[in-house]
Image 1: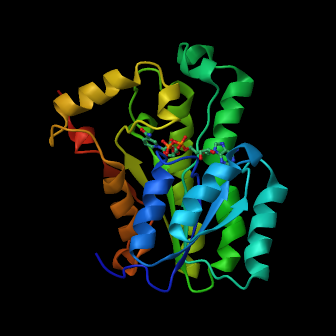
Image 2: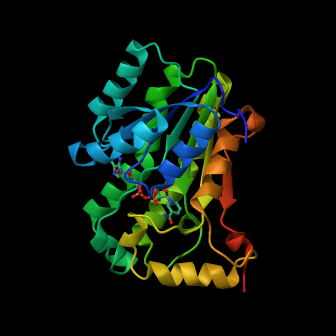
Length: 255
Ligand code: NAD
């Protein structure tokens, strides 16, 4: 491929390991010549993210999105380094395992709030903090899943949080559009990652997709990443407030 992101700096939140969708996105952005800043969530992740960022020539900084001071500190660090941001990738979600393992109606108040704080509100907080650094406009991107609009077994509270995330994309796109900042989501088909392993019977979801999706197969992380390149690039300059499905077409199927 080419230089689709040449001259752009991208902040990517959500690389935990080599299987993270955010890592596939970081690799594709690097291939397109973007400058990269990756974040890690706490000391436990630091070494792995350090090793992965070394492969990409990326800078790394800490950021736990539940801590406002860490989001502020991250942006302050970038500002001090004179970094303009052109793209922000939010690839973050979390729900308590027990809330994914029992009927949705039994979701606890604390579990509901936790899933929404990490998986939906964090996009709002990150977008607000990043926008002042996006002085030439830019692209903010998040990752969603079909569970936002349809009932997927065992996705439960995470589906409700993804619905809030997708609605947040639309409201942020409206707020930030006058600054030429675009906000979109990619709704990715299921991919085996650390987060996905928290969903009971995840492999049966993969089997169902391979059987029923128009393309008769599952989604590759690189396919999600290439769509992220498009959304971050000037090719998508007219696209904002959207949810783009990268799911081998599964979401169109009824029966
Ligand atoms: P992953 O486990 O590799 O990534 C999840 C990331 O969220 C991790 O890097 C983790 O550190 C981060 N995170 C969680 N809580 C955080 C916090 N408080 N502060 C900062 N970071 C925090 O799994 P993934 O599948 O690559 O997930 C990335 C995104 O893609 C998520 O939003 C997920 O819902 C979405 N998604 C995944 C799939 C799939 O099937 N894997 C499908 C559609 C959408």
